Length: 322
Image (cartoon, rainbow, N blue to C red; front, side):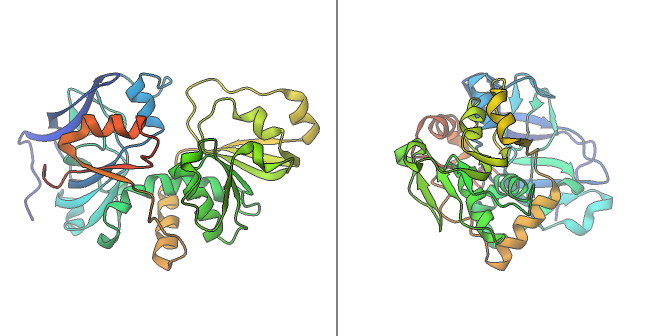
């Protein structure tokens, strides 16, 4: 393994979103590494159709660290090729990296889309090398896991949205012993690919009511729609990321004594929980990555990820850039 660079200037190829809809691959300086840091040679990063779309379109709400130019991405996997004195034991590990703040001259929101990353060893999670590029799904899977386990005694029986997050919520609900939920999806092109659960248009689900509804659509008008389908004392869990202000009519929620929960950003224990399900065979991450492009084609890949309805998940391959 290479020695961990000290004060020597290091450069990395990084995807830089200079302004909304203006993106390029650039050489960016890396900050000096510390004794607890690891240097990761990135293999794959995925593009988030939720938060990164907001950055791409210029619609991201006020968020800590927001501003252009920035390096996006929080779904990265790679190999530790060097480490500080306190992290030497981790050299050679294949790891999941949930973003990094290691660049000079550009912001990191969320800082994972680069050929090399420097970050504290405590932030990376060792993963089986056999997962390949499917390991980039760990961020979304951990987000789904947190939403499902928010109330472990009440598994979701309706999921709104059949994108990757919605599919993972449904899969994890089943993998953790819950009854297969129903999934609502407006876009007919995205109603296929279910794995042991039903998918339908909202209007085709009749007048059914549900105890627990998880929204994975990011629709800022979801609350009134979901509350109308709640059973008494039911709950709505918001697992998407919303660019607009959310509101709801009070009377229907009052009559149902509804609970509205927000499922926050995933935590390390959620990643651990997902890996346990994957390694046991209870959860599959297969069939969710539909497109893969070299990192050098990032501009085209980002446009396709956000504009092509057939693109469930776009992954960038950094191995030729490393």
